[in-house]
Image 1 (tube, rainbow, N blue to C red):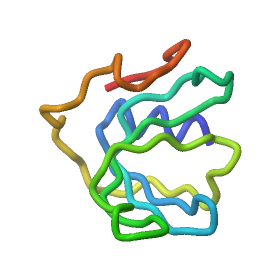
Image 2 (cartoon, rainbow, N blue to C red):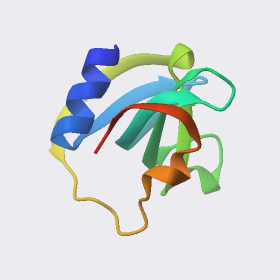
Image 3 (cartoon, rainbow, N blue to C red):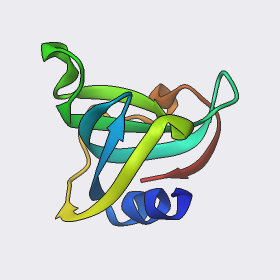
Image 4 (tube, rainbow, N blue to C red):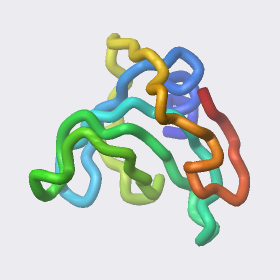
Length: 96
């Protein structure tokens, strides 16, 4: 799973997965160790979530809760409001 995330970040490719029983479509930006010590994906969520505010926002996803991960053949451009320091990571493994 980590290899798919790495490829997606390196190639700026959209990911689709299930997280907490909800389908998600995201632009992956950073993968690393969160402040709580968990491997975490920081991404811009395009679709999905549990409520109306779940769409089009920055989110963090704990790796252990990601299911059915798919690398899509869709690329994305960097968002102007992206800053690696905003990912709140203790250690960054990969970033765009």
